[in-house]
Image 1 (cartoon, rainbow, N blue to C red):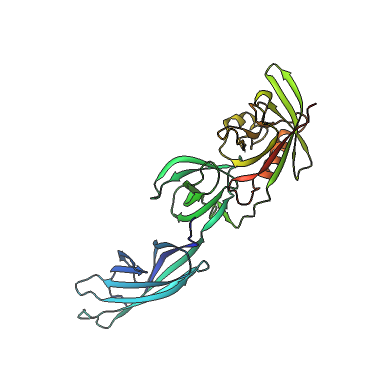
Image 2: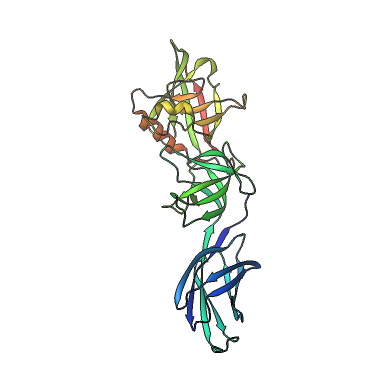
Length: 360
């Protein structure tokens, strides 16, 4: 579990050059809590020189004191210098713009000794809350694509995450000058589902600051009842037909399962969607969420592929079909009701399904 509570970014926004002109070329040294950045800068006198460079990024577990030390050296045959510092208390609530004023008095010139210039450095401090968050910005089908990353931040294979995924956010990066449709990346550890324990990153669209939400309120665990009512045979095989009742939804839904491989009577855990299932592609015209399937944990076959899903084909799954009800309304209603349910103490478990047999 990531213990960092917030990330602080300190950006040098601009340098205001006022007073007497003593030169244009400067060597600048900025040290923040022991980390130093050196760069050369040509400054135009009596103007605001835009910089907009990220100087410092760090994650913290608790509030800390921050010291910003600025040293400036005029670059000529008789260099003059000046310095100043600023102390801040960094916390989750620290943000805003902070000035550091550096005065430089010219001493090595035959004609301009005593001339003083003033350089005002404007630093912008921004803070991002870290820790447990929930993925809430996805596409209309309930998914978003990202990349797995290793401990060094190197990107690997593609990963697809579902709406409501619980993650542990540990870093964000922003690029305001990006020419693409994205403004940055956010990094996190996945805490539930198929890729539990993996680290990943998502791209942040330019019109959003994040795809994640803090303090997301998950719902109580769902309760799904599946009652076998009859057995039918057709050209495709023998099937069990039954009713599905989801607690909190008044509608009773129809479902079926392959008779030879249907779930035994009992109670089973339901998991969050693991990945977009190609088997749902045939139904996207009637329901955009049709690729979102909820895995049923069957202890007798731990690696089994039992799912609760929409469709017209079944190999033992609880397959919801509604010939007399709008399919889009059916699965959308079920999905929206259960996807953010969670069973306390069991990451990735949304609730339980109980199978009952009423076949005479």
